[in-house]
Image 1 (cartoon, protein in one colour):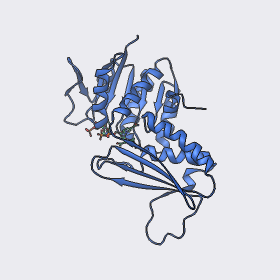
Image 2 (cartoon, protein in one colour):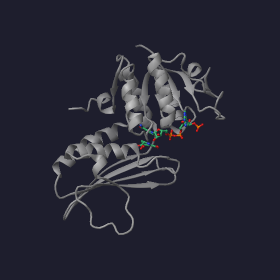
Image 3 (cartoon, rainbow, N blue to C red):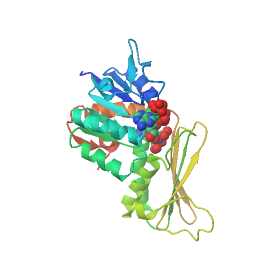
Image 4 (tube, protein in one colour):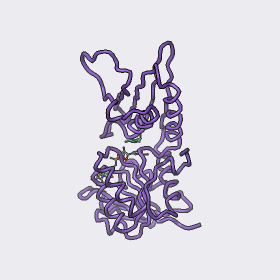
Length: 265
Ligand SMILES: NC(=O)C1=CN([C@@H]2O[C@H](COP(=O)(O)OP(=O)(O)OC[C@H]3O[C@@H](n4cnc5c(N)ncnc54)[C@H](OP(=O)(O)O)[C@@H]3O)[C@@H](O)[C@H]2O)C=CC1
Ligand SMILES: O=C(O)C1=N[C@H](C(=O)O)C[C@H](O)C1
C-alpha cells in the first residue's frame, strides 16, 4: 500500500480539525503539513499525532512534504492555495463553498496542471441524494413546486449552502432549466403568486446544526420531501480521504464526488 502524504489547509478550523483526526486514524495516509491563516494565533501550533506538524502560514513551509492538499477554508484562501498546487503538481481536494464564477473558472483552469476534486459536500449520503433528486425532478417535471430548504450552524458565512446550490443545479439540469434564471432566494412583501418555473431557496442559521437539506416537491393533493441530515462532520472528512485515494493515479483533471463514488451514468 502506497502511503499518501496529505496536508490540510485551515487546520485549526472545524473541518480542518476533523481532517487531522481522520488522517491520524487512516492506515494509508500521513499528515504531511498544515496551513493556517497568516496572523492567526494558530500559526506555529502543533497538530496531529506525535511528533506532530506545525501550522504554517507560508505555503512552501506547509506544503514541502505534501502530495495532496485538502482545503476547507474560504474562497480567497483556496484560490491562493490553488495557484501554488497547480505550479507544484500537488493534488487538491476542495471542500470550500461560496465561489463566484471567476473562482470556479480558476479551479477548472488549474485542473489542466494538477488533479482536483471539487465538491460542496463530500458525504456519501448527500451524493446519493443528488441522484435521487435527479430522478424525482424528471418524474415530477410538471405540477410540482420545488423548494430547497437548508439549515446550518450560526458560524456559517455563505448562503445558500454550496450543497443547496448543487441540489438546485442538479434539479434545474434534469428539468432543462438554467438555475441562474429560475432561482428565487428568499421572499418578502407582496410577492405575487408563485411562478411554477422557479426553484425556491430558504436558509436557516442557528446553533450547532451541522447541515440539514430538504427538497420539497409540492403538488396538488400530495407533497414529497427528500431530506439529508448530517449528525457529524466525520462523513465529510472520510469523503475527502476517499477523494485522495481516487486522485492518487490521476495527474490532471477536474472531478467531483460523483466521480469518486462512481455515481455518474
Ligand atoms: N465540501 C464539504 O463536504 C464541506 C464543506 N464545508 C465548507 O468548508 C469551508 C470551511 O468550513 P469550516 O471548517 O466550518 O470553517 P471554519 O471557519 O471553522 O474554518 C476555516 C479555516 O480556514 C481558515 N481561513 C479563513 N480564511 C482563510 C484564508 N483567506 N486563507 C486561508 N485560510 C483561511 C480559518 O482560519 P482562522 O481560524 O484563523 O480564521 C480556519 O482555519 C466552508 O466553505 C464550508 O462551507 C464544510 C463542511 C463540509
Ligand atoms: O459550512 C458548513 O458547515 C457546510 N458547508 C457545506 C455547504 O455549504 O454545503 C457542506 C455542509 O452542508 C456543511
